[in-house]
Image (cartoon, rainbow, N blue to C red; front, side):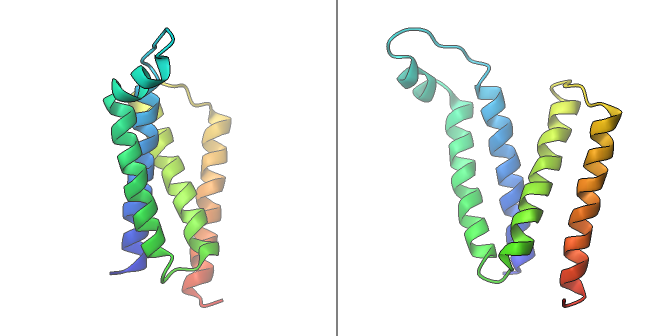
Length: 121
C-alpha cells in the first residue's frame, strides 16, 4: 500500500483521537475512584485510545516506505489542521488573524518539505 495513503489514514486517526480526548475531557469526575470512573465511564476517551492505536499502526506501516524527516512533519501539520479546524468550527474556539498567519506559514513549510521530496533532493 502507498506510504502516503497510510500516512493520511494515520493523521486522520490522530486528529480524531485528539478531538475525542477533548470531548471526553469535558466530563468531570470527583471522588476516590475518579481515575477508574474517568476511564471506564468515558466512551470518548476509550474510543480516542483505540484511534491512537490505529494511528500508531498506520504510521508504523507508512514509515516502512517514507522518510521520517518527511512523514513526521506531515503527520504533525495535518493533524494540527484537522484538530484546529474542528476546534474553530465545532467547538467555537476563537482563532486570531495572527494565528491564521502562523497556520499559513506552517502549511507553506510542509509544502516545502513535500516539494523537496518530489524533486528527489
